[in-house]
Amino acid sequence: MDPIKLAGIAEWPTPTKKKELQSFLGFMNFYWKFIKNYSKVVYTLTQLTSKAEWTWGAAQNQAFQQLKKQMAEDVILAILNKDRRFRVEADVSNRAIGTVLSQEQEGKWRPVDEPRLPWQWKHQLRNEIG
Image 1 (cartoon, rainbow, N blue to C red):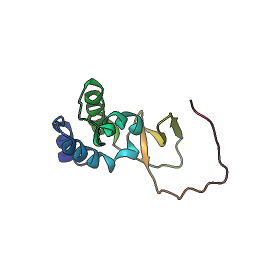
Image 2: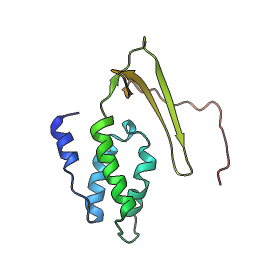
Image 3: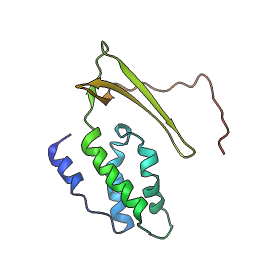
């Protein structure tokens, strides 16, 4: 990622109103697929974009800071090398589902920038939660 953008993320001020938060989330939306547990982390922030009363607390601040930190550390993508091992991680909760294809490079697992293929549903898996 461009070092100027990384510096801008690190210095992004804590939102004080809905429009500022929406601006931050709009920016993050481009990178969501490269951030581990994005849906889980961003959940407390997206709740503030509804018509609910604005209440910025410790949970929201923690999520905001975590996203900024992960952007600085995790968004460096690996280029897929089919001769090296890679892993698929899946995360499912009551609120979100996500997967990441990662490859170990330079001693660290990094998300892979690889061509996306369209999903094809062959089987449907159902599991009641809650």
